[in-house]
Image 1 (cartoon, helix red, strand yellow):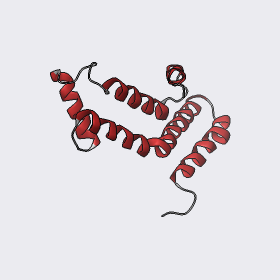
Image 2: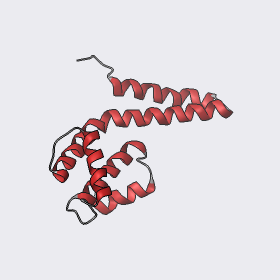
Image 3: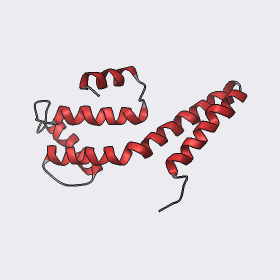
Length: 126
């Protein structure tokens, strides 16, 4: 619908400006805040690239796991309710797979260089 640059490219352009031009010219507290801003933009960039696909996958897993329909927030609340009541436990088929997949998807956006995330991907064969 929109011409280039798209949202991902715009965020990347600003992040790259901060990292390559602004941060080397800054010192102290301002340099620190520029790094924080660049990291935040990197998270936004990954969320824009991966977020809707992973949200769709999480929603599909929850619908299968719970055997019901609803939006993501409602299904996550329902999963929490069932966990608290004991209706769902670690023995429930698909629960641990869902939780692992959801956690890895969130880490892929938030902390893709986190060593624990990298080890988990290696164990999965990714």
